[in-house]
Image 1 (spheres, rainbow, N blue to C red):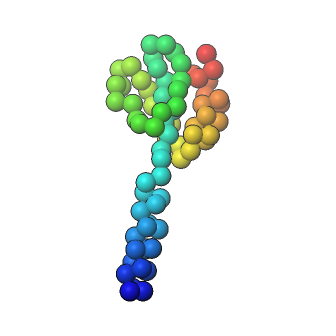
Image 2: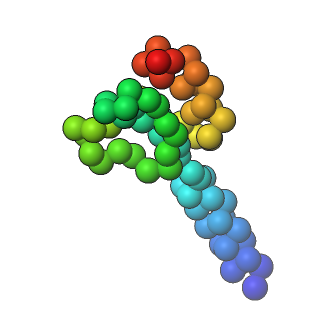
Image 3: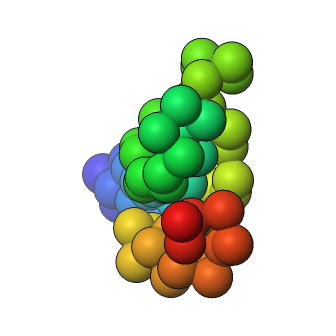
Length: 71
């Protein structure tokens, strides 16, 4: 029983970081504005990906320092 519990804990420990959310800063070429999203842009003619971050606060902080996003 202890072996199964240990195996379950190890699987959970390695699976948790893989399921962490990723946030993307995207630049809309039409409106000339930036936004934060949880999915990568697929419409490359309309959006440019400006960066990939581990948390929403990191993405917003990075966005505030990007010259394209200050317009």
